[in-house]
Image (cartoon, rainbow, N blue to C red; front, side):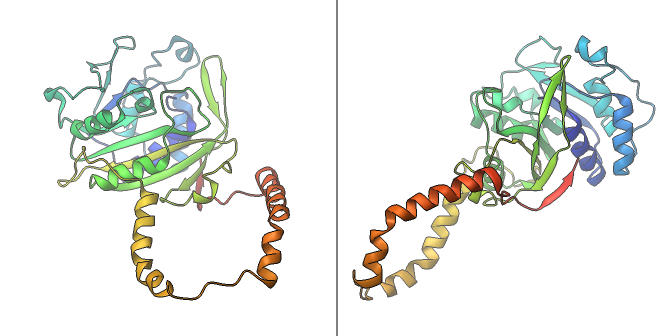
Length: 312
């Protein structure tokens, strides 16, 4: 997806929270969909001082360069990085390191980077466990991995996968990373002259379980992506395979409720007479009413989303 307005503003917020320094490694070369003037306006709005004295270069995409869109080098250096590097499986866009992240990382790249940044690249890499392990190995201890714009909903055939936000929450928790920010972002987008435009992003704090009410057909037609920042600690690993968080919660609840269930096992069952019998006879009407309610809910009622953090 590259870096449109919403991604840029979230990265500015992250640079403000914890300043960027050292070397950033991009997975693929990021395509920037905005100009220097746009960047300066957003930085001012967020109260962030961009690095001064950085040479301004334009996009490696000629169509975007003609519209004044910045290069990835200029954008990341203005955020505070001293060095901007990239890796890719192909030489097509001029990456600094030619690497197949489906396979174990070359030893010379291990622990070399202060930030590893990707904007949906992992969706296009088939061996997902291997690429997540490689992200861990690329980082130095104390470094950050930033997933910025990984498709969560309504991005069919953008890559091999659309990734639920819980994948990131569960993986980084299982591997003892410090999760600094985990956001779910929604927007509508359109393309013009090779440039991606989006409306204002709705940004929500994500916590595992917060979307349970929407998981079966209720999310709607919004485009949604994940934004996550996680810090590698001395205890962090990259090879622990997580269990799905919703089942871990269910197992815990089951264990906690086992004693109560055992105590209730000897209670007499309710009789199938009177009101109970008549209720069972109306199940067909109840199901029909439920279908009407769900149709109205999907089309007209407000979704139960996590608290809105910001609009960017």
